[in-house]
Length: 115
Image (cartoon, rainbow, N blue to C red; front, side, top):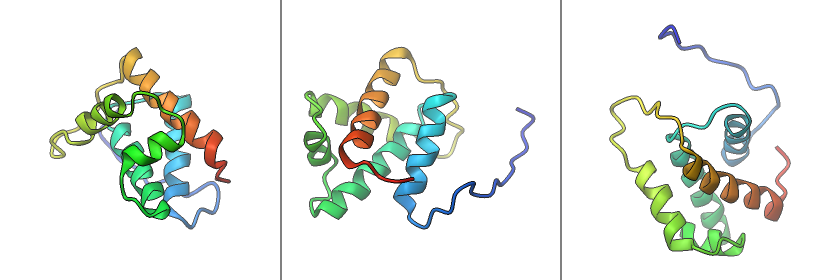
């Protein structure tokens, strides 16, 4: 990385934030996951929970078939509440990737959003 930022246009027309989050997270899942992606995953879970009328990420996790809801919520929250004032460029370890992939894959399978 050279320290420069670039804005990239959407490759697909996405008008809803949660669908854009799906695109961003799928790209990261296929290329490289960083711990800050948990914050985006949490936002996605909260958006879905809000749509379902609960606002609780744990409820969404239960609906998609996550068995250890409290443990997964703890992992997501731990990585979502880091200090936002410094770069979070930490690459996810294998265990974190397993949590992330399990939740993301089950969201995609359960709700089959078109993004």
